Image 1 (cartoon, rainbow, N blue to C red):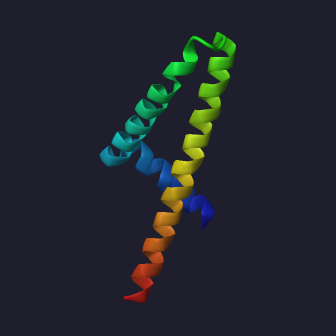
Image 2 (image 1 turned 45 degrees about the horizontal axis):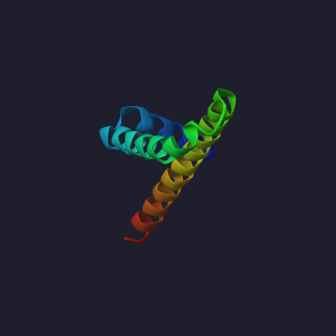
Amino acid sequence: MSELLIELFNHLMERDSDAVKMQNRINTEMERMLIPYKDKLSEEETEKIYAFLYNLSYIAEREATLYGIKLMMRLMLEL
């Protein structure tokens, strides 16, 4: 079931316009929040921080989406 949910998540994130908009908003906010640090860090440090934050963002999006799917399934079973 977990593999199926992850496949569903990947499909949603690539093809659903609302999901793409959400990812763009998150990326824009991360960029905005990192502006104050760009001049204080080396290029290598900046790249590491970006990689860390994008990975963290992906995990948070995936887990929240999977939780939402599971919650929706539970609610549908209650009807």
